[in-house]
Image (cartoon, rainbow, N blue to C red; front, side, top):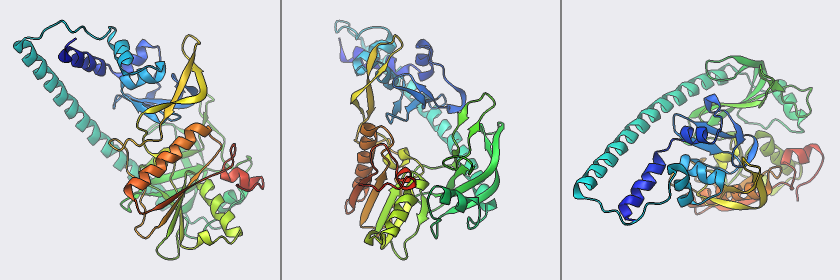
Length: 401
């Protein structure tokens, strides 16, 4: 086959929309970018499709992309096999020749399609940016209306989790906060909540992290179900979280150490444990939450095969499970959480209650992100005991190794 034919064949495969490929495979796409079971590795709500962006994403593997990437993810095949799946035919033979007129027509067509894609992507980017700014303003109103946490259910919630309320934590209390099923949709829950301010890398307010409270439950979080009886998360972010973080304990002066973990409860658990031991690590230390794990670890470049896990395909056959690698996709990565110039040591706090292999790769990827941006940093990875998170260890009186 000629290089031209082969390139056209790949372009043909890349033209296939994620939605079209999902329809071929009878994969139902939930509206509003909702989470659902992954057709490649299962789960409950780890897989989502964004029709406007023509992208999919799997939270467990940390991978996503176009229909080609989805074919590789589901079938466990390589790039060429995925192209064959999408085009419905094998790679073209090398015998065909291309005339000058045909080549000119092909190049014009490809250039036109590239322009159209660029224009559409630019339009979608403008719409998305406006939506993010509108959400940021709504989040700012939530933050402004909330009150200081001292003596409120926020302090009681943290105590319920075996935690203190750190001085200087960017936390507030909302006595009655609504949870919407989608923007402009219906209210599925309304009640007291802990509200945390997300600060962007540029120092501006980016959004809020909300945790609905119910102290009658084991972990103090509200049990929320929608009209169909589906259990919903008791935590939700409004605004923009990428590259943002939640300050939970500022240092007395310019920080020399920065400790970052995924959850608010995780980070305060480590803070309290160090304080109770009179640890010297507290000196000059600042503590922050990364809002979620993906925001800490960034995008993976490629996938690796899980050493032990398999998942059944549509025919019930065992297929290999692939997860995001420890390498960073720097070309498509989102903004990095800000590290003050005075910081010399960075501690990344990882919970051990998720799947160990994939979590370890994610945390290694996080270290590489920060190391690339701040090569002067000494970076340490601190993991909780396998099977537990830091807060569970604290609530049960266990001590991290």
